[in-house]
Every structure is written in structure tokens, then in C-alpha cells.
Length: 89
Image 1 (spheres, rainbow, N blue to C red):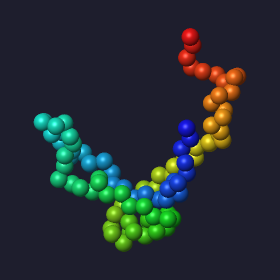
Image 2 (cartoon, one colour):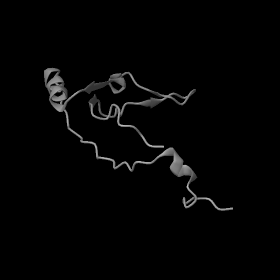
Image 3 (cartoon, one colour):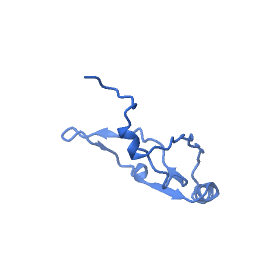
């Protein structure tokens, strides 16, 4: 299965990891009084994301995503007789 490219062109603004997280003893969930980590904003271009950060007095760093090379395949290629498999009989 190959991943699609939908929503991969957006720029995401998200907050850094919060070191004040605490483990809930009963359920094992992480909890914090800081809810910024739950916020993810997406922008159509980098300039809009930077302008939002500047207008709201946030420091930022830009991390560009590494490009993935996708080799096109078809569903029929799963049934080719010369196909390699990772399992043996």
C-alpha cells in the first residue's frame, strides 16, 4: 500500500514538547495543565505560518520535511509469479 499525497503540502504550526507532562497513576495517560500541545494549525504556505507566529509573539523554527520517493505500483503486481516474498514454506 502506498501513502497518498493529500494534505502533505500544508505548513503545520505546532508547539514544542511540554516537559511538565505527568503520568496518571490509574490510567497511565499523560496529563498537563498546558494545552498548547493539543493545538496544530495548518497554513497553505510558509509565509502565512511565519506571519501568524510573528503576530502572536511566538518564536519559531522551520523544519522542512524530507521528500519521500514513491515507486508507482499496481494492485496486479501483488500476484506476479516472480514476486519476492519475505516468507518461505
